Length: 237
Image (cartoon, rainbow, N blue to C red; front, top):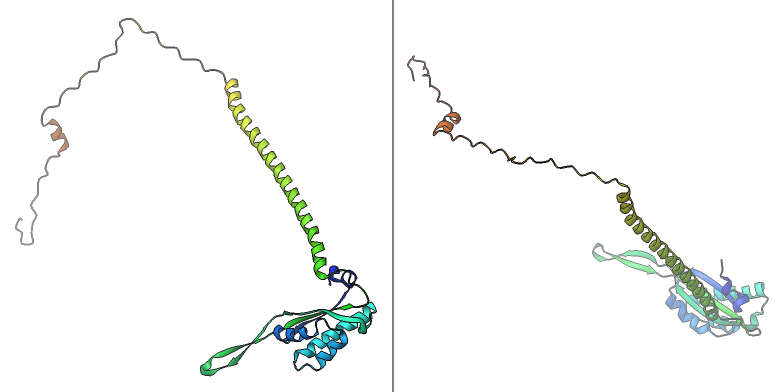
């Protein structure tokens, strides 16, 4: 789908494009330099006698642009001029060829996209492609700035809500312990027992000292008597 900003109604240019042409962009650009700014008749003559192989592909694109101008916009080929012509790089086809000692060498087959723009000498160009892009840029910038303002306002509102919620939570945390302390009944103090006059704490009885050797006898068991064992000869060991 073509962009309306680059249509004939907005730019006054007739466009034709050929994609994935099997020729490198460098070789195509050398041919496009010869026809840029020339009339259609001079450009065809130049391509017809050009020794370069890319001239055939460029001539097909030029013929397509002239046909678009005649059929779609009713322009005469005698009044058309090549306004712009450029070639962009397409994908690269990779192939390999065998070399010495079992090695391989890469072959790069370049492709290009050829674009030709024609304008009529009788009519005026409504707007250039670059001017159209520049006119479209401020709208995008204004939309981006308005969106940035909306985002900043929403962030500010969210920040205010968060601060309000935090303050409310802090007040509740301070108020809850105070309310619990006020509602809880005071615990009665335990009355102390009246002490009678002359009462004194009972003295602890001292332990009796153990006799010497008494504890050691309880701890060490008595030695067992050893019974003699009999051998095969009947003698006691």
